[in-house]
Length: 181
Ligand SMILES: Cc1cc2nc3c(=O)[nH]c(=O)nc-3n(C[C@H](O)[C@H](O)[C@H](O)COP(=O)(O)O)c2cc1C
Image 1 (cartoon, rainbow, N blue to C red):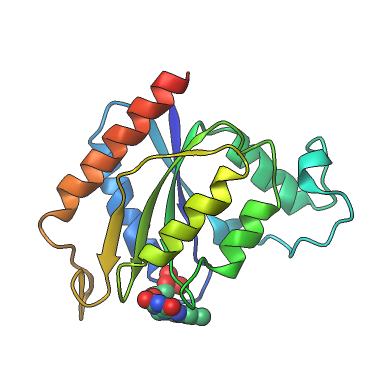
Image 2 (cartoon, rainbow, N blue to C red):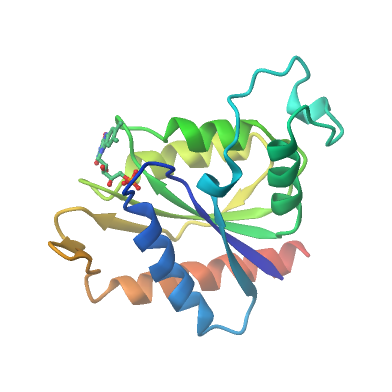
């Protein structure tokens, strides 16, 4: 089983990278799946402008970068979306990256690690609605890192309970993925 940890921010100096590193480090101690990081920034995806709806494109895309993104997502069974909250919602670049593909997501599983002033929970809840449309199965457990509780002047400094929360979330994700086979 392969689990992709997606860094959902492409901003210069983004916080998302530290959060993904924290998830990746925890995942490295686990034997339930093979974990890898997918950094949205590496794909430099164009805004979706093609006439063909991705769900009907039969994985034939106009852009080489979109084809690379498609192949990357195809290679995973499950995902951890590391998502910031922008203006009380999901970040545009990440939503565009999601919209850009179709069947590559279908029937797979997803869990959310969010961050923001209020833990980014609004982004996670929006993602649950959005991902359902492509038949992704989301797990209930999530991790919400508060900018004022889980970060200090040096960066990410998660509260003690976060490791257990992350572990429980990954347990749930891999269990569900295995059951869906
Ligand atoms: C366009 C924009 C909108 C934001 N809106 C929110 C928000 O609605 N709620 C929140 O908690 N933080 C908000 N923030 C602050 C982000 O949580 C914070 O900048 C975080 O570091 C963003 O993640 P990133 O650095 O990985 O891009 C916003 C940041 C940006 C850039």
